Length: 432
Image (cartoon, rainbow, N blue to C red; front, side, top):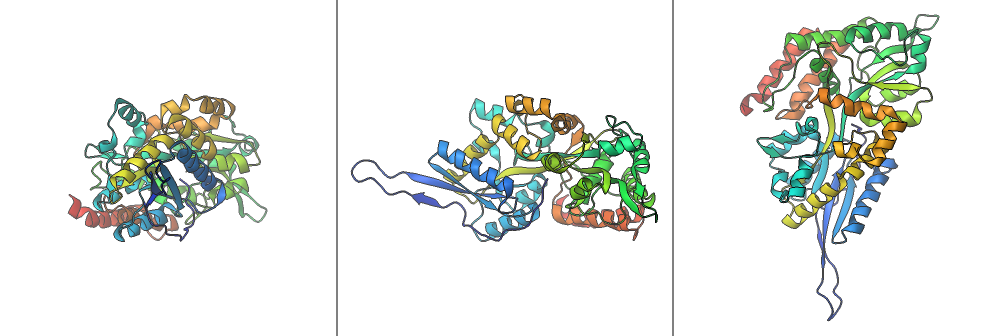
């Protein structure tokens, strides 16, 4: 789940370009152009990979031209896509958060994939994705999104610091109690008593709801119902989960206040934190930049193991032409094939979206050479849908505000969750 800055270029979606004819020989052929919004800043290795992949697809499908448009963060990308929709020029396809599904349906912005699935091979393809990822892709008996860059939260830990603290570097904490105990042993202070290394860090800016959802799942609570019109923020087990997070800060083993999402990996690289919770989408980043031996583990359990899934799905926009929609479907099928999904997983650290991808030689070899790449896949049986409701951005903001209020000490966990519940109930009343 990488989030990056906004790029301001707006390109009109879905132009159909007529090529010049060769006189008296052949009729002109039309190239169907599909604009493709992708949530990343311009430049960098991911943009280059997407560019190369789009070019490779067009080489094999010369009647289709894919134009990637790098739209910034996920938040920026959905704002840009919906703005383009209102102006009558939406993208043909876009990768947006899986949790944007209800919002896109409510805006009448997208079409379900079911109408494009016509052959036995099409159906086998749609059925091939991990069920945990389809929980945020289907509703009302229809498939609205197709998994692409999907993730779970995992725990990264510094094996060298584990050894120094007398902990087994090959046995990461498997429970809340074990993690709190390990965090105490891993926290370091200088001669003046100032903390130089925190034992554990769970970021609380950007996407606190996502990290917190893992704690709620581990304590046996699903925060939202399947219909996306009711939440359980004030459940006693939810409050207990928030108290655990707040207690880590009170004990001085976790940074106080709001912890930045974007700088958490850097803090890990600089040994300012010994254990961090973040997306498996950071795996390649950690592999390339950690100058020490590190481990990757499933998140610790309370009543059960668990993580929400995360990341982005492909969507097809309704206002594009039938030819563009069919071309987009063809592109999405191609880029999510096992070999393509395997290469994407290796390039980025995101979880490959099907068992077939993990059966490719590419991921078999990568998993043998780099076992941490398999941890997120192995956590999928314990993973649930990422938090998603109608009016998702405002409901999520209510939860985020409550979490940050508790972590900064301006409200108790119980009061913060009661206030968040009241606001969510108000927002969701019309959807019941």
